[in-house]
Image 1 (tube, rainbow, N blue to C red):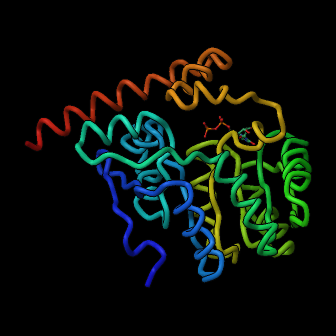
Image 2: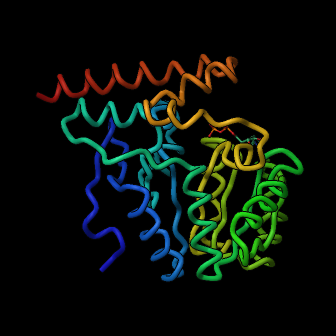
Length: 249
Ligand code: UDP
């Protein structure tokens, strides 16, 4: 039986998202790593869904990902509008931390690719500190530029990790993984956006009460106001989901 046999899929404007909570997500990721077939994991949020409408290559990656985690309160709202509620948000940064704990227990090797120079190293240092026994097979900032791709793939394959986290921001990180997954030979690769910045302490996460109230986006808007234009994706997404629902009645 595949690790996803009983998981419900909710579609947002055609883009699939798996209805899993963080515990189930971790069990599926564990199964992926043990099965050792290369698998791609994406963390879908409203920006992803809206970007996929304009970008056919990104859409294709989202349609073919092996696991699509529900990231962002906008998806939870959208799912309620559709009448198919999602269990909870499963964010990239939380997943990185949970996988690190699992990896320390099971002996899985992690590789951290992307973010500004020094950030992946600092994130790795903190993950090892929090999870004694964890093996980080490598860290590298690199860049998503096509002319660096062969050299980066060579570095990663030489390090033989079980898990690859890529922090080049969406959609670059997810396109990068899709292009290289087969030749990387890594059982599980996942795009994680700004997760290394949070773990390394370079960016501050919203306080827990804000996260619980679904206000992490507001915290982000206050601390990174230049993202406002991108964040318009949230109301546009909700509007498009409602319109889609009404026209399909
Ligand atoms: N980044 C990078 N190289 C690039 C573009 C981005 O390493 O060419 C990193 C950046 O330093 C940050 C992450 O990718 O750590 C993107 O974070 P963001 O929160 O913007 O992710 P998104 O919301 O776009 O997924």
